[in-house]
Image 1 (tube, rainbow, N blue to C red):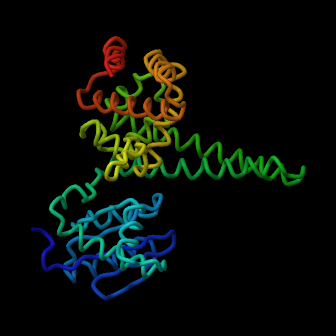
Image 2 (image 1 turned 135 degrees about the vertical axis):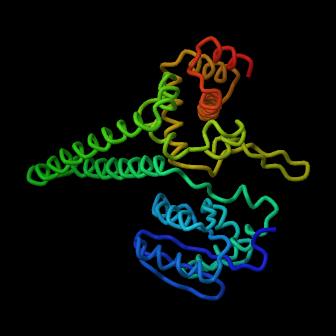
Image 3 (image 1 turned 180 degrees about the horizontal axis):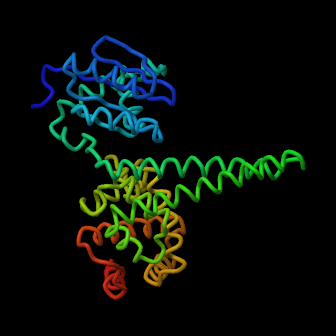
Length: 323
C-alpha cells in the first residue's frame, strides 16, 4: 500500500501565508511562488508521500498546481471533512499551527486508506488552469462591484462621483476578463462550450464555471457528479429512524451557477418548466423542486459531454417524463 513508512504533510492556507506541518516540524512561509518552492524543497528532502490542503476559496489553487508539477500527491479536501476529523480526534482548539497539524494527521489516514486514489486531487491541464484563473478573477471583480454598488446607495454626492468612477473601471475590467475567457473557451474548449450552450438556461457564466471548476463533468456517473457538486440527497438514518435526505458539501462555486442555470431553465426551457411544475403539483416544496431541477440539469449535462451530443428536446423531454 502506498504511503507506508513515509512522511505526510498538512498545509493550512491563508491569503498571505502557509502553515505547513511535516512530522513534528512546523514552518510558516509566504503564500507566493518563493514560499511554494521552499515547501516543495522540504517535502522532497523528507520524502513526503501525501499533502492534505483545505479548499479555501481559491487561495490554495496555485499552491496545489505547484505541488503537482513537482510530482507531489495532493488531496484538496472540503473544510467540513477536516473540521469533522479534528472533532473526532478531540481537537477543539483552532490556530493556524493546530490546523496544519490536524491536516497532517488527516494525511496520515488518507495515505494509507484502501480507497486512497479517490481522495487524490487530479492534475488539471494548463489550459483549464488558465481558465480557472480567469474565473476566479472575474468573481473577485464582481464582488468588488457589488460592494461599491452598496456603498453608492448611501453615498453623498462627492463620494458618489468617486464610486461611479470605480464602478466604471470595474465594468471595463469585467468586460476584459469576459473577452479573455470567451477567447480561451473558443480556442481550447470549443466543443464542450457548444454542447453546454445548446441547453436553454445554461449561460456564459455557467459555461465558464463548469469548464474551469468541474473538469469531471462527462467523466463520472450521475450520482458521483451530483455528490461532487453537492446536489445529491444524502441519507440521515439511524437505527429505526429514517431522517430527511439533505444536500450539503460539494463545490460551492459550481453549485451556485447550477442553481442560477436551473432557475433560468425552469423559466425558459419547456422541459424543465414542466418538470418543476410536476414536482410542485406532487406537493414538493419549491426549494426541493429547484434542487431536483439542479440535479436533473447536471445529470443531463454530464450525459451530453460524456456522449458528445447536443441538447435534444424530444430525447430529454422523454428522459424527464420517465424519471
